[in-house]
Image (cartoon, rainbow, N blue to C red; front, side, top):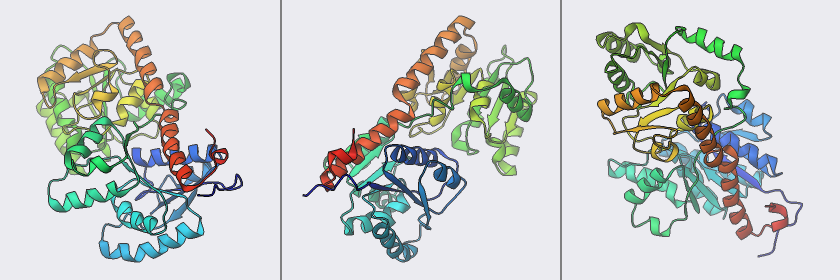
Amino acid sequence: MSQKTNLVRPVIAQIIPALHNGGVERGTVETAQAISDIGWRPIVISSGGMLESQLKRVGAKHINLPVNQKNPVSWMLIKPRLRKIFLGENVDIVHVRSRAPAWISLPVAKSLSIPTVATIHGKFEATNLFKRAYNKQMLYADEIIAISEYTKSVIEYQFPKLVESLSLNVIHRGVDLSIFDPKNVTQQRIINEAERIGLPDDLPVVMLPARPTSWKGHIMLLHAISKLEHLDVAIVLLGAGDANTRFVEILEKKSVELGLGANVRIARSTRDMPAALMLADVVVMPSVYPEPFGRIAIEAQAMGRPVVAFEHGGAKETILNEKTGWLAKPNDVASLALSLEKALGISGSERDNLSKLAQSNVKRRFSIKKMTKSTLDIYRELLLEKGFSPLVLGK
């Protein structure tokens, strides 16, 4: 195949349901910036959202299209529009990051002989044949990215025959070390977060930053802390306040039942996560079900905070047990309580050592730079096969 001249800039189209402020969406923006930084042309196709302005700032083009639709009838109407976009923008690689976009986009890309990439971010377990078939579409991309070894193992378990023919890569999620750096967080920002949450001045803080959903383990954390009778702590359920009234009422009722009512803060999510994490003496990720990755674990470690989590899912890959945090027996309240007690009981010098190791762990293994470099390497291999000159693609 003849090589494309060095005047051609590769065009990478990432396709995502929407651009809300979640880990998948932030990873999309970070990848778009990396594409732009090396002189390629990034496009993101989604139904829109609050991160559209960030895409513009990093030099990416956003195209609004309802690729979040899950109705197969609507897919037939969207596909011709998507085909027109791929041709009009001269798209060289299509990268899907969710299942509905995969169903819409992969067949169109294949019909145009455009190489494809799929990143599997979330849970991939299939409880029935319909869900299994819905998930499977993601595996028809030319290159598959799993966000953790755990996610890769779920894919292999669910589709043992298919995986033999897949190009399956593990690329861990990354954290922006310029944003999640204690040295870059002012005291005023920390004070603002403390006042927003309503924190007392004299208590150690145990923080659970998570979406308001029961599987994130809010109730289990409350039970575990209730067992620490000799430890008076402030418990911050960051993000739980975004929930509907019913979820908040359940948390409030359980807090009172366990004698923790005065110490629990059910707070809305923050726009300044680095400052919020600086308030925490311990960050907890007690998810009832395994996290595919668990981005909060690396964000907390980047801020030098010890993390306590259950020993399953992505937490086993991100937390160095008894070095940068503690891994408790999954869904075991007594084990979680013991891990919390250990984390809260470390001396000042032990905390300093843990903080340094945690930051080093993230810098070495979970930076945005590492994540985007690995993703760009996959793009380069596909572009070389497509006929691009190595001179265009760089290193």
